Amino acid sequence: MGDADFIPFESTEQFTPLIAHMAARAAQEVLALREKFKSLADIYRYLVAHAAREGVPACHAAVAAALAGDSAAARMLFKRIERWPTEGLEWRTRVKSNSVALAKLLDDPVQFRLTVLAIIEGVRGRLRLPADPQCLEFMDSTAVE
Image 1 (cartoon, rainbow, N blue to C red):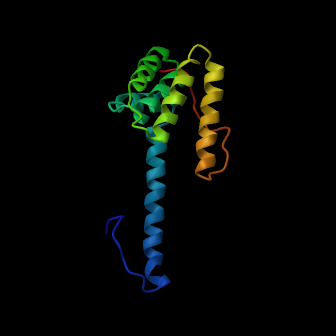
Image 2 (spheres, rainbow, N blue to C red):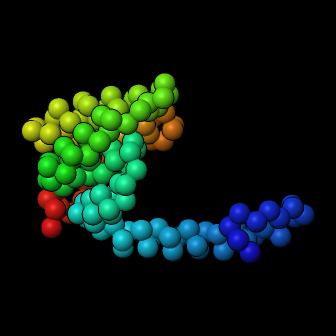
Image 3 (tube, rainbow, N blue to C red):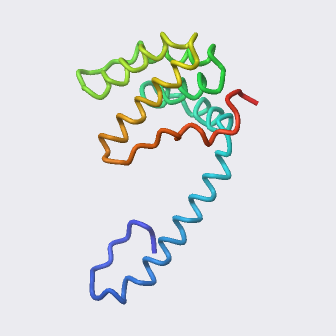
């Protein structure tokens, strides 16, 4: 059975093993992601390698590059975002605006990090997720290894 297969409801007993299976699979996925992304350097390498597209992927890679201490890569990626057309979409305009603001902070790593945290908190708030001011603190390194 695939994750997206539809099964009509018949009883709660019918779904108990399915729920247990899904929960176990989700736990395995979390452990795999934690293993894959142990450090900021791991996240940075992954995002930069997958930033072929403009916009959000490039923005995420630029932020990771800056947080990892690679300001040259961050500058290059932020420049790419400047050329990205917003097509009149508010969310694209917000990504570009955030990118411009972050690019201006590349020479001030403390303020850059605080601004990234504020953006994360804003997104978490819009998604109705609880605040997580320590979300960047799990990183075991602030420099690329």
